[in-house]
Every structure is written in C-alpha cells, then in structure tokens.
Amino acid sequence: MARSFKALDLLDVESLLNEEERLIRDTIRTFVTDRVLPIIETHFRNATFPNELIPGMADLGVFGANLQGYGCTGLSSTAYGLIMQELERGDSGLRSFVSVQGALCMYPIHAFGSDAQKERWLPRMARGEAIGCFGLTEPDAGSDPGSMRTRAVRKGDGYVINGAKAWITNGSVADVAVVWARCEDGVIRGFLVDRGTPGFSTRNHEGKFSLRASVTSELIFQDCQVPAANLLPKTVGLKNALMCLNQARYGIAWGGVGSALAVFDEALTYAKNRVVFGKPIAGFQLQQEKLVWMANEITKAQLLVLRLGRLKDEGRATAVQISLAKRNNVWVARECAKLAREILGANGIADEYQSGRHFCNIEAVYTYEGTHDIHTLIVGEALTGIPAYS
Image (tube, rainbow, N blue to C red; front, side, top):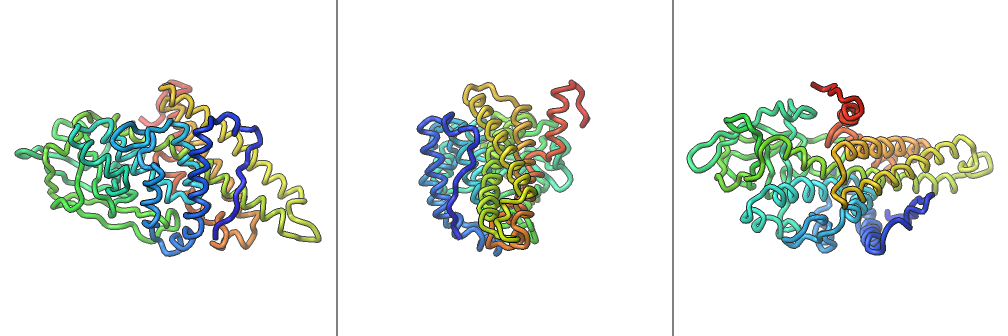
C-alpha cells in the first residue's frame, strides 16, 4: 500500500536545488507515491514488471531525460539524478528499467549511432513505444568484459553474430538490443539487433530473490545476421561500452539515495509507533544509534551525488568520481536496508512493509554495473597509480 513520505534532509540540501530541479523531483515523487507504491508489492511477489506504468513514465519524460533532441526532455544531469532517486525509492527494478532504456540503450544510439539509427529509435524510445536493452555481460565475462566471447564476423553486406549475453535487464521484452561483440580485427564494437532477427533468441533468468519486479534475460546469438547499417558507426573499442556504463552508474548512485531514503523513512515511522516495555522503540538507545547511523550516511550520500551532478553538468565528472559515488551510495543503501529490517523486527520480512523488498533488491544493485569490489579497485588505482586487476 502507498505510504506518506517525508525525505530526510538534515543539512538543507533542498536549498541547493533550483526551482526546476525541485519541481521535477516532486513530480516523480508524487508519481511514485500514487502510482508505483500501491502496486509494486504485488508485482514483486509475482515476479512481473509493471508494464502499465510505461505510458505514464513516458508522459513525464523520464526516458532519456538528459539527452537532447529526438523527443527527449533535455534535462540537466542533476535533474536526471533526482528522477533516478525517486524511481528507486519506489523500486530498484523500476529504476533499472528506466536506466537501461536511457543510459544504456538511448545514450549509445545518441552518442555513437548514425542519423538514421537515431531517427528510427530515439523518438519511439522516448515515448515508451520501443524498449531497449544492453548486451555486454556474458556468462563468463562480467567484471572483465574485455574477455568477451561474442563475435561478429563480416559476411556480405552485414555481420554474423555468435555468442551469448547474461543478466540483461529488459532482455526478453526489448524491441532492440545494443550488443557488443568482438570483430575479426579484435576491436569490440556495438550493434543494434532488432527483436525477431533470425538467430536471435532470449530466455529469462528465473528464481530471482532480487529485482523480482524486473525482467532479466539471457540473449543468445546463433548465426544471427544483422545488416551493416546496424553497426553503431562511432564505436571503436571497449571504451565506448564503458562510457555507457558510466552513464548508468551515475544514475545508480542517485538511486541508492532513493532506496536508503525509503527504508529510513519506514524504519523511523515504525520506531515511533511500535511500543515495547511501555514506550516507543525509538526511545531506546540501540534503535536511536541505528537511525542516526542511517541519517548520517544518507546525508553524506546526498551531498556526494549533488556535487557529482554539478560536476557532470559542467562536463567535469570523471569515471573515478562516478565509481566512488556508485560504490559508496549503494553500500549505504545496502546497510540502511539491513538496519531498517532489524528495526522492523519480524515485520521486516513481510512485504506489507517495503524494507524487505529494498533489502533484496539492493543485493543486485550492489553487484551490477561494476561490483563493489571492482569500483574499489578503480578508485584504488586512481589513488596509487597501480592497477590491481591486471
């Protein structure tokens, strides 16, 4: 059921946002409260994605919100981040859907695609009429995407792709997949593969305890022939795929704040109302320590992504800064979900409350788009100048 929500703001971060940013955040916040929270528990329980929300999200301009032209909203990076924050306050699966659509599919088409590719896909994707996915991770190549086995061989006026991708959000429902494959010259390039292309099939990962309200699939390519016109012409190496990941990781850093805000608000409300030994549990030192830790870390996370957003709007955000934010904020969200579950006691494992759902979801977010450990090594190399993963 939908619940009232009051965001934590100990350092008046609100005053650092401009009027447009507050309006955008509040609009998405209302959408999440009114449209997402009343139905998301059922979808999580049934392992289904809430397709009924797609038209409403498209009307709000959330798909490719920070891209210019082609029907996209053209918002600032900070405003885009606030959208991701509020969507993840609803559910990580919902934010993942929007993040993949915009940052991992629309962005590479916008940045690396031909004019014809942009005209064909971006307006439809902005309207939610076409869905995209991003095929980089493989069964044996996750943290080390450079070892991918998917191959694209030139044949006639096109390419033949063979290989497989795993853990792909939106995979089986996507109208187009941005697929990364190694060509005969050893260079990794991006291809657009339409749904229904002969030799291209999908199957869903079943039995997930995390991101249950999200479609996660395998992509399988068996002599899949795509025309040369489907090659993203400006892709010339793994660096282009990593640029896409940085767009997504930026949004995830904001999303972590949203998840943490959701569970903190629920835990605080519960602690004020749950009476034990004659007084609310919020009056006990142990519970206050948990609430203060959560508030302390959330406040730092809020400041981190706001500063990162301003840097990104200035064109100065670096991959290391984005890794730092993704690493920190998802860890904060993970710890907050754990503490909220503790405060709720036995009720914390019931989906009448949302903390258990966020507790499960954040485990996937902690791992995807670069594991916590990989982001540690990225920041570690920046500090020491010594890469630990090669």
